[in-house]
Image (cartoon, rainbow, N blue to C red; front, side, top):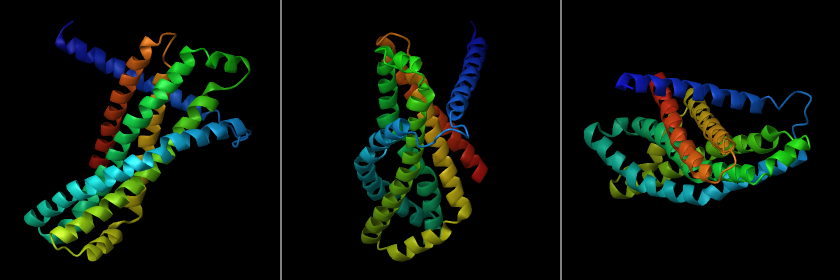
Length: 260
């Protein structure tokens, strides 16, 4: 097969993968019908467990990275921006680089590395060990019990942790910059808060919601794609991690073009 033939084949496989992933997400969301009791006790318990595992247990690493990135990256950006363009463009560029880009992306990478792989391994081992089929025989919907709580937990964790990460990163970055470069931290933070309007906050929320949906859906899709072999678990985990990163960059690229 020649070079263009391989590219065409990869494009077709990627397109079919998007169709399968979209169908998987639509099928999962369809279990929430109007007559269904949303607060199903069993599903609600799984949802809380996943929210703790995905979100709450990630606060420590999120806090450490936010402080580190704020001190190292944000302070360097402050120095570069003030050197090149002057202090008048400082706050607007920080809002665009840190809040709109670095906060959601770094949080998404943490979710992929920490939670996406864990979900794939958890679901894959559950399926290989034969724990899913007995539940299906009992009439329990796999999408309702296994998939939907994980996707919702991922979305909530991504949105909340991205807000938390961005706030800590900017706070420590501006404080460190004010100490090192003698910049008015309070005035800069006030001006930064004034730049946050409904449109920017809406784009931030939509981007993080999409990141959470993508990571959660891909993780559950590949976790349940394992057949009956433990050897496939690592393979599906690798695919889920790589494809989640690819989709995050694609979505982020769309928002960059959209916001230009």
